[in-house]
Image 1 (cartoon, rainbow, N blue to C red):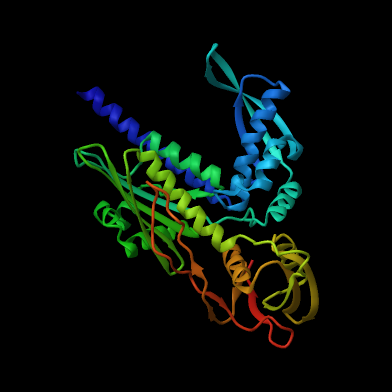
Image 2: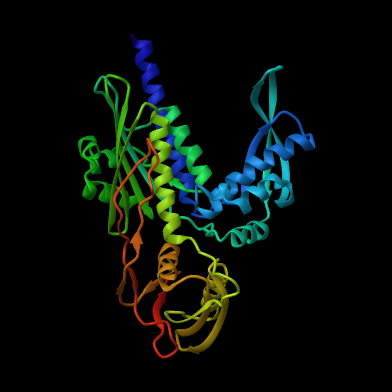
Length: 393
């Protein structure tokens, strides 16, 4: 009896340590390597690499576009058949895993593939598909599950964790998990998490500073079926979504997919038809103290995928007036700046954008479309009436 109790304590400790490590790793930043893919192979032969590259490119196209159907587009499907043409570099790493085949069990080698960003972007433009830049919302995940015996668990088991990690990697979502320490359990007791109490979940999440929160309750019926209820929260917006099915991992993966689909609709850049010129937007930026700050502002804008050209129009005291050529609209610019957390609007004007719901497939999550968080900006973006922000690096 004592031994099984010690094993239980050890298992809980390991699970908590896993969450702690994940939280530390993800807090480091929001940049995702969206052009990288991995595959297990049994050899370094070109034929096997070509096969793996096709699967890798398919995954990358979904991740970079934010569109789960991207690989089915004729232009993309044709490119996938010639995936090695888009392979920028590759390398191999040893593993302790094995691959089962008709001829037996073989040791597996990890093939690491990096695809050409320029080639991928051109493919998306040719197909008329969106480009979701590498700066992604950091998603805080709270989960509580109830098994068919009525026992509640705040730390997902290994299959559930693997499902979260795997699908988040496919979609390019940086995840953040609670430490599940004393502070978390006081701020968010299990009964409030089980009730998906929005205020309590938001309050408990403040210490982690996420960009969005996904909270879910999963309940297993006596027949083995799982029911899932989720809240996807971002700024002042909240979306309730529900699902059901026999596979717990599928329920979790579907919730990650749903979240990624929403973020892609909010942050992805839709290419302009033909050779349409980028829009021109003028911004007034306050609190730029010195030349070092100016260079940071310049690098920040030049690093944004939607900004095609940056130009300084005027520098007066601690204020800059800059002109941007952007691919996208003011709502996308405002959302992108809000995500970057370096420029903050001086005052606010509401620009409403539909926070679209994804068409559901059988067994997937569903929700009604609701309004997205309003973008907070002032001005029209012209030289006479520039958008006004303050720099806060």
